[in-house]
Image (spheres, rainbow, N blue to C red):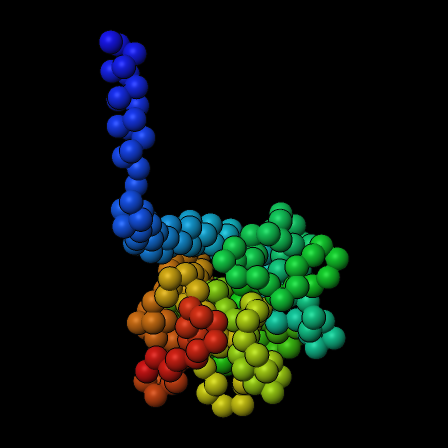
Length: 250
């Protein structure tokens, strides 16, 4: 009896497989869940990269502060013309011992133009002081390059020192797509070669300010920083998350 009953149960179980409709429904449910969850996971990964990026920028800001303490407040922001392929990172702050690893000078969310220990590479963009904050902060060009006095900045809490940036479209740099080691807020004259702030972290850009604090910037905050020491007619631009679209903010 038990054998016959077991055989009947087994035959009954074997006859209850998935129908094609049921299988398609299951596949559709899985596809819907994937469509919902994958963007969430992607944003979570990007949020983690943004946190690392902010930490990198804090450390870079500390390097500038330590350098300024050693040199009466003076920091460099652009190498001399013969050193144009060197970045602020390589030039003084890494080889001078203020930065222990050049990895902290690179945003984890965006590939640099070059990245090796033997060749220069682009890093977080440094604000082009002469354009973004006015010539009043510039020190005449020295044998080493262009520099300014950190302690003279009127509004250090609003003045961006380093930020996520990307190369600007121009005759000098015909395409976007790579980090740029110097940026300006916009082409307000003849300066078309510099990069722009890049909203690469889910529409935000990380930055460190002259006073040493780091923060994520949206378009409104970028505009506020740009106009802190410029007229309201000063044109402000940023590059969208796609790394291609340039947007005038004001």
